[in-house]
Image 1 (cartoon, rainbow, N blue to C red):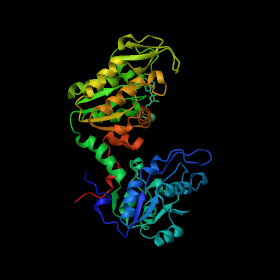
Image 2 (image 1 turned 180 degrees about the horizontal axis):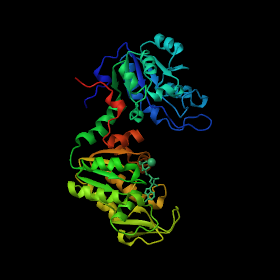
Image 3 (image 1 turned 180 degrees about the vertical axis):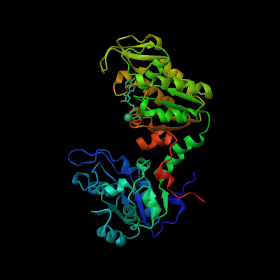
Length: 395
Ligand code: ADP
Ligand code: MG
């Protein structure tokens, strides 16, 4: 990895601005329903505290649209963090301005200050230079540990790096090493498994990965468009009629490049889109007219698992079927198991894929679970993420 991390710079006695992603889900009463994103930052924070840095934390929460909204205050998140890390977290009711300035100034090594929601100011998302300068003036150095927003050039992510040196935190380091590593120079054989509802969502990912992988596996709803493009009937399956040419072109590109493209050989079809629908396994040339394909079949499961044997790198994004319904979850479970058992460097991204993986209890066998939905898709598309590009390079 060619980006500096907090290990590569001196942080002792410094004021360190840490951009985190504490955009956690909350219920109507303001209770945090999942604190994974807060816990995920603890290694970075503990390291900085051990090094006797003073930490200034900044995040967004929800969509306050550029002005203060009480329900999106970070105050409850500060209390949660204090409980998790076992020390006081001072809360600044503003992220910029005189109060934030004096609180940051008074902060001592080993202390944590949490700033109020960055998006209470429209300048944050506009990457306003003066606002970025104000954030930077609170600290000596900036740390980005918010991969999930690094595909956006926002003031706390990108603008700030023009005023103070910026490096990666440990969460960001892992994303760059695994997702960035897979895109830049994956160990071979390299297999990508792409699924999910629609081709449209993942065209960029498929196009980019086609240039990198040895094998590309396509499953899930999007496989129907490829099946239709290959000339088979798809009944009432989800098919993107306007993407048939694209699917044919992608099939052609795979052939030209010598990429082994695997589509389902059989599917589970159902007579309705419902958990209790009648369902059966058929070969892909036998999808009944009034039925719809909602999962890959057992022969496909086996072929996909077989394609992972000996792989050195596996990237998986998108479920193989409507995994939310037990009757159509088997394909996704089989792929999760095959990825976990592959012995390859395994990288899983996508909100639904991660949810499906966690349901199988195999998450701990995956090398890297990418935290940023949009950011990991753009990274897999081969795009430059502004928040990563702005970090200092290693000498
Ligand atoms: P991720 O969040 O992992 O990137 P997507 O959002 O692209 O995944 O796709 C997940 C959704 O795709 C799930 O809600 C799942 O039910 C749906 N899906 C998968 N296979 C099918 C299918 N054959 N027909 C309709 N929907 C499907
Ligand atoms: Mg999704």
